[in-house]
Length: 442
Ligand SMILES: Cc1cc2nc3c(=O)[nH]c(=O)nc-3n(C[C@H](O)[C@H](O)[C@H](O)COP(=O)(O)OP(=O)(O)OC[C@H]3O[C@@H](n4cnc5c(N)ncnc54)[C@H](O)[C@@H]3O)c2cc1C
Image (cartoon, rainbow, N blue to C red):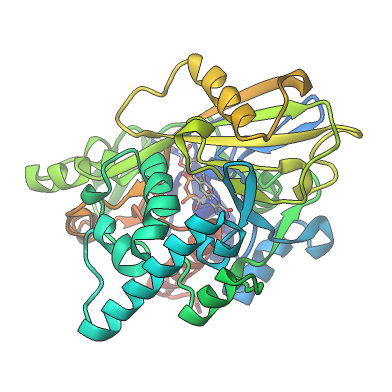
């Protein structure tokens, strides 16, 4: 069986490795990658001794120990990684509010703390009283789950910043496991100043000592180098007998980690209703700025969220230099700033940098005289946006491709809000299916 994998991000690389580990001859696998470097959204950049992740700060964690171990091994073994305690906060005026917000409301000014607490209790009481189901609309879901106070002080402004749409347009389908869900006792404790921990599966994370998050995909790609065609975008996948033609070569099976919303351009013969479903999938892009700073002094934080408009367009700032001591040169430090933009709009121009730095100054996160330089990276597809009808469109698109015998995989290949560990897990599942089809022991 000859297999073509379109895209050498973490999904494509994990699949190729799992196929080889399962007994497929590496010579029968070809990865086509449009970019000159493998890694996709996991890529990093080292510039003047500063390291940053191109698609916003990435950390390695997983609910699945086996997947975590597999990725640590691929990235050079556990000793090649820093192990860090997640320490995150929300910047609220001039103070730090511990994250998740409902576990940190005791850090708020008194009036805001009261509003958040009373709203949370009221929402909890309403749910108990009425037994109401989670509303499908994200704006309504926020108030249903957290109440008016947390909606006003954090959830609404933060989510409007990141999603770039009225929240009524978004569904609550994606929140399970992604938006922390604190028990009411923890929120009561937090409000009176007793420390509680939320979102614990992410409380310890790993980060490569050298080379940024890309060290993981570099490790995955190392044994596959001869099988990866870099700078080779595939623009057509066509039927050829029982198999497929990709880039003028014949393959028995084709895996697409390329964007599902573009699949109608890639694959021949997509019917109009399926094409409309594919093209109706929505996403947000991302601009990341590295801000290199001429100071070693930084708060002991992994990252912080910036919900408020006077903090500028950035929604999140990561202290990359806190992830690894090799992240910045001696005596210096860095911030990685993330700004989302609606996917189908042109990415904001140069003025963005100025308004971003101004916002960070307002938020008290940097002084302008400390900025050595900035470096910008743009990513066209960063976030899947779960607008109403998303799941129906996604299913229709995937089912059609799968009916043709094609295998969609990956964050934008399947249009799912997956982290790299979930991409690896799904790649390993697909490998088992493909190996079974090839009569190799899975
Ligand atoms: C802001 C942000 C923060 C994140 N934080 C984390 C985190 O902390 N931890 C974590 O584990 N994950 C995180 N993720 C998620 C993680 O980046 C993704 O889940 C993962 O990188 C997706 O990998 P993929 O291979 O599925 O897709 P991609 O990385 O998008 O790979 C697809 C590849 O296909 C190539 N390609 C596209 N079109 C073609 C074509 N026509 N021909 C050939 N090649 C093509 C692309 O160049 C790309 O290399 C984050 C993502 C974002 C955006």
